[in-house]
Every structure is written in C-alpha cells, then in structure tokens.
Amino acid sequence: MLRLVVLLAVLVVLVLMLDRVRRVVMHRCGGFPSDTSGTFDAMTAVELYGGPLDGQTVDVDETDADPWIAITSDHSEHPGGRSLYAPDKSGTWRWVRDLRWDEL
Image (cartoon, rainbow, N blue to C red):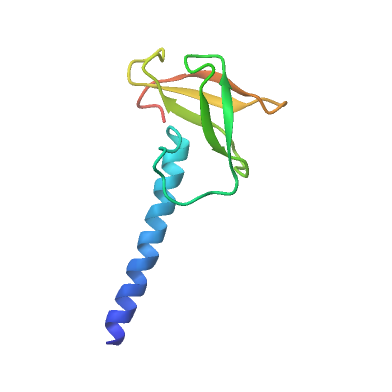
C-alpha cells in the first residue's frame, strides 16, 4: 500500500513538472494556444511592432527575467522559421530578426 502511495505521489510530481515545461516551451516558441487550461497572473497581452507579425497580439510573461519570444511565421525570411521579438527600453515589443527553424 505504501508503494502505491509513493508511486502516485511521484506520478503527480512528474505530471506537474511536465506541464510547467510544456508551458515554458509554448511561451518561448510561439505563445499560448487559446485552449490552455489554468491561468497565469503574470501573463499580459502585448502588441508586436515591425517584422512579419506587425500588429498581432501575443501573451507574454511579465516576470520573465530574459523576455523575448520567437513565433513561427509563414512570412518569415526563412521558410518554416520564427520571428524574434523582444521589448525595447520603453516596453514596446519590437521585431529583432527572423530565425531559421534550426537556430532556436
């Protein structure tokens, strides 16, 4: 019985860790899908300026110590690549450059 309880506890911890990893990867590689369950209090919508995704809105983590986001774009300089955006000193999220699919 004790082994079963320990096994269940380990499984719960693994599921929580994998969910956190999934959320970080989704954030870094293209934003969150609209059906993401749960809420992040630190998430906020920002508008992107410049580049192929100019005018689009994405969710970003306000508490990220190294804020940037690379979003897959059909209009990127590199087919299948991503467009890299980061906040400038005023907090406006500006296009930095396009990345090849294998650069990230």
